[in-house]
Length: 587
Image (cartoon, rainbow, N blue to C red; front, side):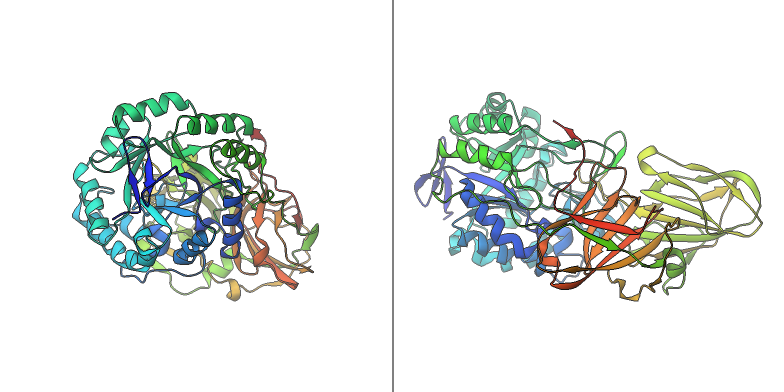
């Protein structure tokens, strides 16, 4: 018997009337040492529930397992901490999560299966997801409400009505969960229009809607679709995400609070998206591709109630006041902003050029033409392609099919230009100084598309490459290893400027670890690590101009900062500041 059941117009929890007042917080976007703090702040705002996605691609990075459940991925621990704060949990295990997350949470090894039909009754997709559930669900069994745990509801798929209409597939997902012991309430979520709700829902499964405004209109659409049952907004969008080169999206707190009040006044349940956004650490950000490819930035602040560093923002206080009109709110005072690291300057006085380092690594793959990342079994980061150009002269390099996603071209080690999927680039004028000149192409995967039919689009060089119409052959392809930087041959450097891809390293002292923000004035584009922890990408294109550094990754005494700068820097200093800069706002 599920703990959470439905009536003609609401919910019962253990037989008593219950309204879900939830907020989204993705455990995999928050440092595990900060989970308890964020969950406590959720309770103090008045939430009785938290919601999280479960990213298949992180938990099962290889098709034959094992299941990853440690560190950032210790979902059972996150759920226990939620229960310790008297919070219930809405669990959204996929298979697809969107979430502005790399490939929408679908594992790269699955996306590379030739001809596979994603999110469908394709037996290969269904078998893969079933295998994942066979690993995941036993580990979560103690966390179901039926077993005394906090999870009171589980989602089927994610806004499926905007993607497909394969009802047999949705039924398979339902049966896969039920057949593996999930007794809790199941629900679907779709955008609040009749087409999506009809295509994405199942009889006997709670249908919920996603929207951020026009509350009465969208609740009306949900009620028209389901004349009886609870009204619930399973994603009440209170902010938005950002793309490189775009604005930083914000929403005025009073406006969002007024719509939250309308939702609760209508008797609806709600899941605030996001209560706390967190960060796309490492290379985990997703991308959109409508008319053009647009990768998501490293920050997932989302203009949420809790900021990226966990401080209460204007929405936190406004929402707390609204919730108090409709439900009990703890009498404890609202939390205060956390301590920040004092302003700290770092001199990056050691460096290692990237291309010579990668050229010397073993494991090169040779072929007549360039291979894609999937063909090489590389699922993120960079590839370095290398060949020779038989003819000298001025001419056009043509990349048939373009690049995925951004390619830096070098001729005999000299930068020759950049091609971007975002601009649909396929050609580049170059000067080849001599016959037999070395052509190198450094390609960066900027993040897998997380929404729509382009999910799983290939990365790397996507077809043959030619110069002056003649195909270039005999390619050497090398992955650029970024998981462990211990082997990078850093050497002292006093250069004031640098105009080639290179690793840079410096040390700095910390008296008492605390949250901080890495600012990189004069640097162009690359990635950053602190004490080996991968903070993510930076890019002077903006809007984001600082990277969040969680206090737990710092240590008293000496600390280490490494940058991989792909272009140029006008200096060798970096700053740690107490204030984030996410860019000019677009309210």
